[in-house]
Length: 91
Image 1 (cartoon, one colour):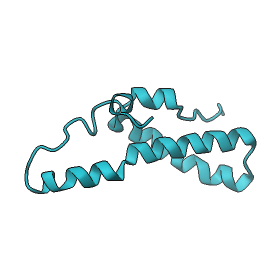
Image 2 (spheres, rainbow, N blue to C red):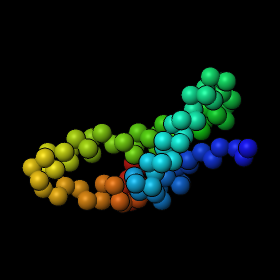
Image 3 (cartoon, helix red, strand yellow):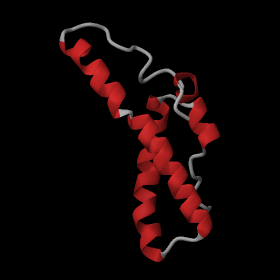
């Protein structure tokens, strides 16, 4: 089996949230088993990178800020899901 391809900051900067979601889900499924078997120093670095990407992609503050507009039927932040993370900052 080929080694798991971890997300990198550089790659995440080029993807939007729609493109990142399946990659984040796959990597999130990978880590519990890897952690159970024990992490190397390289695993730890990859895991911390993944957590950083996941936290930026989730952007709870952005969701909270945009929520009231959407509840009132206003368009909100149209680029939230479609604009690459590198263009939105944070990574």
